[in-house]
Image (cartoon, rainbow, N blue to C red):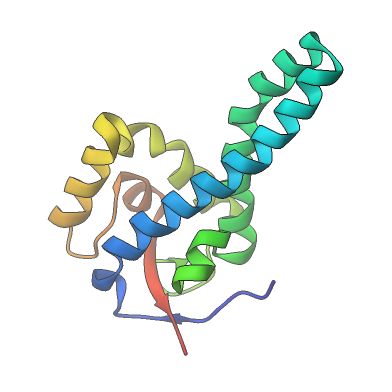
Amino acid sequence: MDRPRPRMGTHTETLLPRIGAFLLDVVIVGIALGLVFGISAVISDTLGLLVGALSTFAAFGYFVYMEGTYGQTIGKKLLGIVVVKENGSDCDLRASLIRNVLRIVDGAFGYLVGIVVILLTDDDQRVGDLLGDTVVARVQK
Protein backbone atom coordinates (compact mmCIF):
# COMPACT_ATOMS: atom_id res chain seq x y z
CA MET A 1 0.00 0.00 0.00
CA ASP A 2 1.61 3.25 -1.13
CA ARG A 3 1.24 6.57 0.62
CA PRO A 4 -1.18 8.77 -1.28
CA ARG A 5 -0.36 12.41 -1.94
CA PRO A 6 -2.60 14.87 -0.11
CA ARG A 7 -4.47 17.64 -1.85
CA MET A 8 -3.58 20.37 0.63
CA GLY A 9 -6.22 22.97 1.38
CA THR A 10 -8.99 20.36 1.38
CA HIS A 11 -8.93 19.68 5.12
CA THR A 12 -12.18 21.63 5.57
CA GLU A 13 -13.98 19.14 3.30
CA THR A 14 -13.33 16.03 5.35
CA LEU A 15 -15.79 15.86 8.27
CA LEU A 16 -18.27 13.44 6.68
CA PRO A 17 -15.58 11.27 5.04
CA ARG A 18 -13.78 11.10 8.40
CA ILE A 19 -16.91 9.88 10.14
CA GLY A 20 -17.60 7.37 7.36
CA ALA A 21 -14.00 6.12 7.36
CA PHE A 22 -14.04 5.63 11.13
CA LEU A 23 -17.30 3.68 10.97
CA LEU A 24 -15.91 1.49 8.15
CA ASP A 25 -12.75 0.84 10.16
CA VAL A 26 -14.76 -0.06 13.26
CA VAL A 27 -16.75 -2.59 11.22
CA ILE A 28 -13.64 -4.03 9.53
CA VAL A 29 -11.64 -4.30 12.75
CA GLY A 30 -14.70 -5.54 14.64
CA ILE A 31 -15.30 -8.36 12.16
CA ALA A 32 -11.63 -9.39 12.14
CA LEU A 33 -11.28 -9.32 15.91
CA GLY A 34 -14.68 -10.97 16.35
CA LEU A 35 -13.60 -13.89 14.18
CA VAL A 36 -10.32 -14.28 16.07
CA PHE A 37 -12.14 -14.01 19.41
CA GLY A 38 -14.81 -16.50 18.36
CA ILE A 39 -12.30 -19.08 17.17
CA SER A 40 -10.11 -18.66 20.24
CA ALA A 41 -13.11 -18.91 22.59
CA VAL A 42 -14.11 -22.21 20.96
CA ILE A 43 -10.58 -23.53 21.49
CA SER A 44 -10.39 -22.43 25.12
CA ASP A 45 -12.29 -20.14 27.47
CA THR A 46 -9.02 -18.81 28.84
CA LEU A 47 -7.67 -18.13 25.36
CA GLY A 48 -10.93 -16.40 24.46
CA LEU A 49 -10.66 -14.13 27.50
CA LEU A 50 -7.04 -13.32 26.68
CA VAL A 51 -7.83 -12.50 23.05
CA GLY A 52 -10.83 -10.44 24.13
CA ALA A 53 -8.66 -8.44 26.52
CA LEU A 54 -6.03 -7.85 23.85
CA SER A 55 -8.60 -6.77 21.25
CA THR A 56 -8.60 -3.15 22.41
CA PHE A 57 -4.84 -2.97 22.00
CA ALA A 58 -5.06 -4.61 18.58
CA ALA A 59 -7.66 -2.09 17.39
CA PHE A 60 -5.58 0.80 18.73
CA GLY A 61 -2.49 -0.65 17.05
CA TYR A 62 -4.34 -0.88 13.73
CA PHE A 63 -5.04 2.87 13.70
CA VAL A 64 -1.56 3.87 14.89
CA TYR A 65 0.26 1.58 12.46
CA MET A 66 -1.86 2.27 9.38
CA GLU A 67 -1.91 6.05 9.76
CA GLY A 68 1.73 6.25 10.86
CA THR A 69 2.99 4.00 8.06
CA TYR A 70 0.61 4.67 5.17
CA GLY A 71 -1.24 7.83 6.20
CA GLN A 72 -4.51 5.95 5.86
CA THR A 73 -6.58 3.22 7.38
CA ILE A 74 -8.62 1.02 5.05
CA GLY A 75 -11.67 3.23 5.69
CA LYS A 76 -9.74 6.41 4.86
CA LYS A 77 -8.39 4.81 1.68
CA LEU A 78 -11.89 3.80 0.56
CA LEU A 79 -13.18 7.34 1.17
CA GLY A 80 -10.21 9.17 -0.36
CA ILE A 81 -8.73 10.94 2.65
CA VAL A 82 -5.27 10.87 4.20
CA VAL A 83 -3.62 11.98 7.47
CA VAL A 84 -0.62 14.28 7.00
CA LYS A 85 1.40 16.65 9.14
CA GLU A 86 0.22 20.26 9.15
CA ASN A 87 3.08 21.16 6.78
CA GLY A 88 1.98 18.50 4.26
CA SER A 89 4.69 15.97 5.09
CA ASP A 90 3.87 12.34 5.84
CA CYS A 91 2.26 11.44 9.15
CA ASP A 92 4.76 9.39 11.14
CA LEU A 93 4.26 6.86 13.92
CA ARG A 94 4.85 9.47 16.64
CA ALA A 95 2.16 11.81 15.30
CA SER A 96 -0.17 8.86 14.74
CA LEU A 97 0.37 7.63 18.30
CA ILE A 98 -0.44 11.08 19.72
CA ARG A 99 -3.57 11.56 17.60
CA ASN A 100 -4.85 8.08 18.41
CA VAL A 101 -4.14 8.18 22.16
CA LEU A 102 -6.25 11.33 22.21
CA ARG A 103 -9.24 9.47 20.77
CA ILE A 104 -10.04 9.03 24.46
CA VAL A 105 -10.75 12.78 24.62
CA ASP A 106 -12.22 13.13 21.12
CA GLY A 107 -14.42 10.09 21.63
CA ALA A 108 -16.11 11.45 24.74
CA PHE A 109 -19.91 11.57 24.54
CA GLY A 110 -20.09 9.52 21.34
CA TYR A 111 -17.36 11.56 19.58
CA LEU A 112 -19.30 14.75 20.25
CA VAL A 113 -16.13 16.37 21.66
CA GLY A 114 -14.14 15.53 18.52
CA ILE A 115 -16.86 16.73 16.15
CA VAL A 116 -17.35 20.02 18.04
CA VAL A 117 -13.59 20.67 18.07
CA ILE A 118 -13.41 19.92 14.32
CA LEU A 119 -16.22 22.40 13.68
CA LEU A 120 -14.57 25.08 15.86
CA THR A 121 -11.01 24.87 14.47
CA ASP A 122 -9.93 26.59 11.27
CA ASP A 123 -8.24 23.46 9.91
CA ASP A 124 -10.99 21.05 11.00
CA GLN A 125 -8.73 19.35 13.53
CA ARG A 126 -9.86 17.26 16.46
CA VAL A 127 -7.91 17.35 19.74
CA GLY A 128 -5.68 14.49 18.56
CA ASP A 129 -4.84 16.39 15.37
CA LEU A 130 -4.07 19.60 17.25
CA LEU A 131 -1.60 17.90 19.60
CA GLY A 132 -0.22 15.57 16.91
CA ASP A 133 0.24 18.47 14.45
CA THR A 134 -1.81 16.63 11.82
CA VAL A 135 -4.65 17.36 9.43
CA VAL A 136 -6.86 15.11 7.35
CA ALA A 137 -6.93 16.05 3.66
CA ARG A 138 -8.45 14.70 0.48
CA VAL A 139 -6.22 12.46 -1.61
CA GLN A 140 -4.73 14.02 -4.72
CA LYS A 141 -6.23 12.52 -7.87
